[in-house]
Image: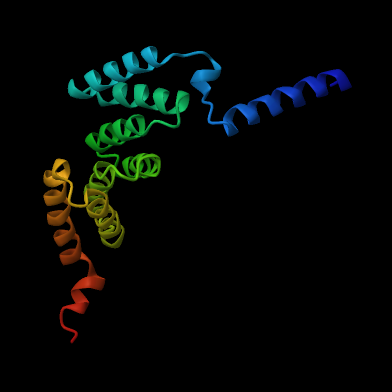
Length: 169
């Protein structure tokens, strides 16, 4: 590599770092517009509803790659992975969705379901407690609150650390 090529490569890398550090995405860099991303989301959702989970997962992964700042993409990916019983992968997707939108209790609630399926009782409790905090007393999340409370009771009942506390005074 010549000095000129090295300088060009360094300049490109610096531009990429600047683009991403300013909140840019791969999609904006490649000029993929919001309308195209929304259309892909609609197709991914349609594939999920048609129980074509592999196709839905591929589309949601595309969305996550091209716009890593949108919680809906990661939530959709998690839902499709959960439907395929890929619980550990779904938990990871829900974790990113939660980081991107801490006020939405749905990812943490769904992570609770997955963690229960994986018999990771303590982690399920943590996820469900987070979901309840995100629900607060908001009426729009009343159903999710009830689900999370029921799941939390289940997680505590199955958690050996919690069942040992019942006999303590």
